[in-house]
Image 1 (cartoon, rainbow, N blue to C red):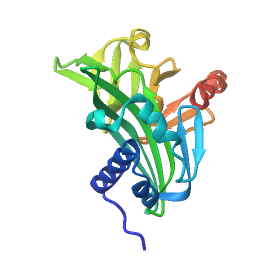
Image 2 (image 1 turned 90 degrees about the vertical axis):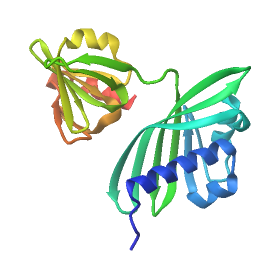
Image 3 (image 1 turned 135 degrees about the vertical axis):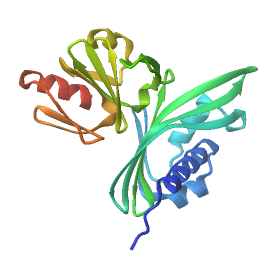
Image 4 (image 1 turned 60 degrees about the vertical axis):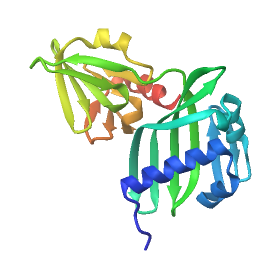
Length: 231
């Protein structure tokens, strides 16, 4: 029987794997990967642990000896069984370049099966996640990072910000928020905006979010909304 990683162990393993990619440590990477692992960086694909395509692309952006530190900005873990795990998230790399501090942020997806990596996808993000200042109806002030938001719900002239297993209520409109939120957020209903990175599944006329909540999609908008998630 395969022993499950704890969340802390898995987070450490994923970050060690990412550091090895930036260092081009092929021996360590081969030990962590399935022989037929698939790599994806942006629109570029490659397979097998002997490919350096992804690592070469990382080195085009920054040399490892220029890197100062790594930050795991966000991580979500989806366990389908003890030996089938999908990990998604964001990490930031601070590096020195031309005497100035540079910051590069990458979205990642790592799929593991039988304790080996079988799929890796990295996408460089042009900007860091936005921080939204929210003044709740009880006058408490919150600063919520977009990466923790699951979906936003409209109730008349009030907004419910859903994050994790919590929520915050404020006075606002979805129309205004549509202009403020990043491209990761999609309006799927007149009363709902969802974070597409937090979608667990999409089915006919509804979306299931990672926290288990179900969001309706109007029948006439289903095809249009679905295209936004698969493009």
